[in-house]
Each structure stands twice: as structure tokens, then as C-alpha cells.
Amino acid sequence: MPEPEIRELRYFRAVAEDLNITRAAERLGIAQPPLSRAMRQLEHRLGVDLFDRSGPRLGLTEAGETLLKESQPVLDALDSAVRRTQRAGQSSGGLVVTAKPGVATEVLHRIVTELQGELPGVQVVVSGFGEQADMVRDGRADVALVSRPFDDHGLETELLYTEPRVAALPVRHELAAREMLAPDDLAGIPAPRWSRANVAERNYWSARPDDPVDGPIVQDSSQLLEVVAFGQAVALVPQSMAERNIRPDVVYRPVTDVEPYQMLVVWPAGSRSADLAKFVEVATRRSSAP
Amino acid sequence: MPEPEIRELRYFRAVAEDLNITRAAERLGIAQPPLSRAMRQLEHRLGVDLFDRSGPRLGLTEAGETLLKESQPVLDALDSAVRRTQRAGQSSGGLVVTAKPGVATEVLHRIVTELQGELPGVQVVVSGFGEQADMVRDGRADVALVSRPFDDHGLETELLYTEPRVAALPVRHELAAREMLAPDDLAGIPAPRWSRANVAERNYWSARPDDPVDGPIVQDSSQLLEVVAFGQAVALVPQSMAERNIRPDVVYRPVTDVEPYQMLVVWPAGSRSADLAKFVEVATRRSSAP
DNA sequence: GTTCCGGCATACCTCCAGGGTATGGCGGAC
DNA sequence: GTCCGCCATACCCTGGAGGTATGCCGGAAC
Image 1 (cartoon, helix red, strand yellow):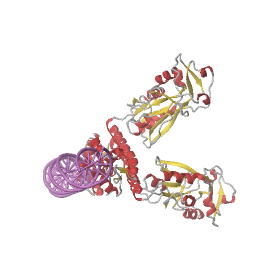
Image 2: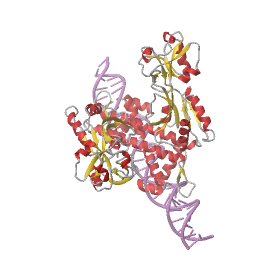
Image 3: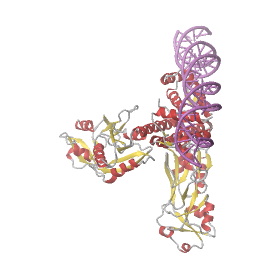
Image 4: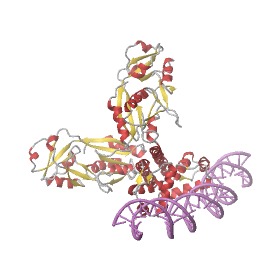
């Protein structure tokens, strides 16, 4: 009967990834023959050939490619379900909310203060850049404050506030003499890239999304300003970050027509618990830039 | 180790749904003791109590409620993965595309004709109202033509075209004397509800989404016009449907300020195969109301 | 109170399937 | 030719899923 078990999917993924049953078996900590048999059995259950065993090297059929892609969401959903269930059982009520370091934590602090008494046990987790959405998706957190751009797969969002973004320039930069900049002025100048921490396949995104020129990689706002001060890049940062980071070697200049900085509350799609609803309500109640 | 298997999730769902292990065991076709043990084992694996066994009746703990909600996406994703894999293995290339009866099929026909030669083996499945999105989600179809409103969970969409909607009135209706209607004129008048075929928990949606007054239930456009002709309801229908269904006992009148009828192409999020891309491209290439 | 019963847990058995070892087959490298 | 990497087959062993029998407990009926 076509009812694959989770174990089989994990096995399949391991085999499909390095296309070598023997090595996959090692990685999985089992012997080769059982894995070989498990794959045949999986094929038999689905009634479909997953592997192309004709060539010298093991290959994936069309169906195999499909299953490899499609099994990921299943495993993710399962991990997420397990985490959320465990969290629901252990934590005696109370939300886990996450935000990246910087502006978001200040906003978060205000929200949490405001929630005192209304919601017991709100737990704040400050996490790495770009990790917030993942944490909400996989159940490590109930709700997060994030800024655009981010991956909103499987999430629902509400806009918290927007604030203008300004260009952060080295004080001796030629553009620093100008009072106001246009986006075109920045064209061709490298932008720092935020590094996403703790992720297997490292990825980065630009501090100036529209700009294709990628500059040095930074992990927090102080590194970013350091890089700017050194003249290696020019970044667009939220106004409030500029106000909070006044240093002699960096100047901030308004830029016309740039997308404002957006801060959002995000939570897993379809999981509006009472506590979550209250959090979102308080968060959006009086939300202005700090 | 916390690694629940699919079987356990299905078992858990059965138990959690009728909160009676004995009956759940019957439904599952197994004996009661193994099921009882499986649930204890699941709790042990997750390290969390799922059931409240204190009361006279079996209850769900907070964690149990969570797992009940969270296990659904896992099972759905698995079923979807299996279907897609099997389809990828059997069908020798070619898309399955689905649309509800009526306007959509005509548009679809044009697209398919246009694809002749470019794509081999496009298979068209005409399905029940409101079922298209589900079919794409669970892998029974690769792509669908749907009209708003629909549930876009897990789907990506592209707008095909819009066309105005007009009110379908019984010919003797007092509003039939007017040349043009405003939304307020229809307030309080019942709207037909589309019935969703072949779904366990029946659900319906209104032919006039903004209107709260629900009228008779219909399953296709001829039933809808019948109901209108009988004076039981007034519906908003796409212009082209009006043009195609001229009958003596029904008149059509334009309505100011109504959301236009929107037709979209939808496909599973993140699965842009070459064939699919070509279909979407051709579909949107020259898309005007029929 | 006693009795009965619905419903879950415990005890114990059976048997299959998941995992192991040993070994064969097969194609490519040399 | 020989060797080697890699998968499949054959066979054994054990854990666990599922079965039956039965005990325990709380509520309802009286």
C-alpha cells in the first residue's frame, strides 16, 4: 500500500542527495543492504521507479527528482509540528518572540513592557540576522519582528511601522557634501551584505536591495558602520539606527524615492492563538518609529 | 528519540478527533490495546502529555490540541508528495490542468489549442466548483484556472484577465427597470451560494462575496440562472457568462463599483517546471476576456 | 450500598519487517 | 587479465507492532 513512512523519506533524501547508497548508508548509520532494500521497497510502495540504475552512476528518475523536492516540505512540517507540540506542552503558556539585534529589540522591549500583566511569561529571544522567519516557521518561536525583505512562506504578517531610510556614508566621501541624495548617486557603489548566521548554506542579502553591487559581509550594525567608515561601502539604514549611532567618521544623508524601512510582526499562518492575538494587537496598537 | 512516524500521526488524529480510543481503534481497523500503547509511546517520544486522562472523558491537553492542528499539514504534504511523485513517474510528461465548468473552460480551450505542438500531452480535467485549488495543492493537477475568491495557501498565481461583473435579475424584478445599479441596491437581496462538490465538510460561498444574505445553493451556472429566474436570488456574474446565457426570463444589468471578475493561473508554490512555465507564459501572453 | 458497564491499561504471545553479516555479480579502471 | 567500487541477493536475528485475555476504575442505575 502506498504509505511511505518518515524514515523512508529521510533515507531516500540521503540517497538522492549523494547518489551513492553505500555512502548514504554510512551517513545514516546503517548498513548498505537494508538501505538498498528500503529504497526498492519505497519504489514498490509508490509504484514508481525513483532511481535510474542503468548508468555507471546512480541517477534519479523524473519521479525521483520530484520526490526529493516534495519530501522536504513534509519533513519540515513534521519537525515544525514536533517542536510546536513540545513547546505547547512544556512552556506553561507564554509566547516566545524573536527579533534581530538592533532597532527591533527596542521596539520589542516597548511592546513587552506594555504587555506586562496582560500576558504572563513572554519570552524574548534575540536571534541572528534573517533567522527570525525560520524560527517562526519551524516552531522555535511563536512570533517575530522582522524587517523587509524576508521570506514570508507560510507566514502571516501585519505591518508595524515604516520609517525612512538614509544613506550611511564615510565622512570624507564626496557624496557627504550633498544635503540630499538620489538613488542613482549610489549606483555602482558597493553595498554591505548581511550575513545569515548559523545556516548550512550561507546566504547573504544586500543592505541596498535594488543594488547589484555586492560589498563586504557584515553580521551586525556596528560592523556595518565600521565598513562604511572605512569607505568600503555605502549602506541604507533606517532613520532610527542613524539617530542611535552618531559617530564622527560616518554621516547620514536622506535619499529620495527609496523604499521605506518596514517592520512587521509575523506569525505562522493559521495559528492565531489568544496570546498571539493579544501580542499582535498590542504591537500594532500604537506603533510609530522609536 | 523524538521521531514520530506517519502511522502514529494518523493514529493520533483518529483518537484526538473522537476522543475515544476504543472507537478510534475500530475506525482504524486495529485493536484497542495497540492503539492505546501507540498513544502512550507517542507521548513518550515527544516527552509531552497529549491526552488528559483525568476526567471521565478523554481530553486533549494544550500540546494535544497543538499536535492535532500541526499534524494536518504534515499529512497533507505527504499525500501531496506521493501523488506528485506517482504522477511524475507515470505520466510521460505533460501537464494536468484543471478548471471549473463555464467560462474558464473556454479560456482553457483557447490556451490548449495555442499550445498544440509546443507542449505534448496537456491533459485537461474539468472539476467541481472550488475544487481546483485543492487539486493543485494535493498534486492531482499541475496547474489550474481559478477565479477569485479562492484559498491561495501554498500556491503561486498570475492574473490572466479581469472582466466586469453584472447583476443577473429576474426579468420582472423591480430593479430590472433600471439601466444601471449600485451595490446598495442589492443589499438585503439573497445571493446564490456555490456549492463545493465532493468535499466531506460541505462548504459554500456566495455569488456576491460582500453580501451577507445567503440564498439557495447551486452547483453550476444553469442552476444559478434558474434560481435567479425564479426570483429566489440575484447574482453577480461575469460579463461573458451573461453574453453566453441569454434567456427571456433573466436580464443583466451593470453595477457600479463592483470588484471585477478575476481569472488567474495558479500552480504549486515553488514548482516552476519547464512545461509549467511555458503554460503560464502562453496563458498570460494574450489574455483578454473571451 | 451493590451491580453493571463503558473504557483504558496491563500482561503476554505472535510474527513480520527492519537491520545486520556474508557473499555474489557487474562494470569500469588499469 | 586483475582489482576495486558499488549494488543486489541470501540468510539470520531481534525489536516492535498488532493480537487476545483480562484487570482496573469511575459513573450510572437500582
